[in-house]
Length: 198
Ligand code: FES
Image: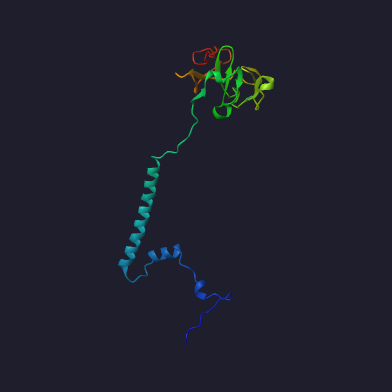
């Protein structure tokens, strides 16, 4: 007589409720000494150890390879062209503020570039055209249209970036070379490279 299928109260066959073998069962099988063939037990254990060793070596090898592919840091360029002197009228030009963090200023002597970093704690001041000054939003330092501090906690004028002209007459800026005017010291603002005389 056929064995009737036993069903759970939900109507599913009892076998489908049987526990599926997990990692613990597999490990138990590997390390169990119940197998009648001892060679099979040794071979299973050997395979297990080999898999562990190979896995460990594989992970270390991948870490070793990773060492040769350092994370790349894309720093903004420090040298760049901003156009021809004729592109700049008298006063403050803010068009490169977001891209290069600079303002281009033209006065009667020439063209220079202010590095847009407050000399107090490094915030970016705002150009207030109506008031003809830069105002730092952090602690209120104020600078005139040439970046010279006159109010607030800023200890010195904002630095100026190196400027030069290329053979075809464009202005090249290098913000990795800055000219400073520390309080009570000599101003570097008239040094060669601090201004383009046009
Ligand atoms: S960072 Fe500009 S005033 Fe403090």
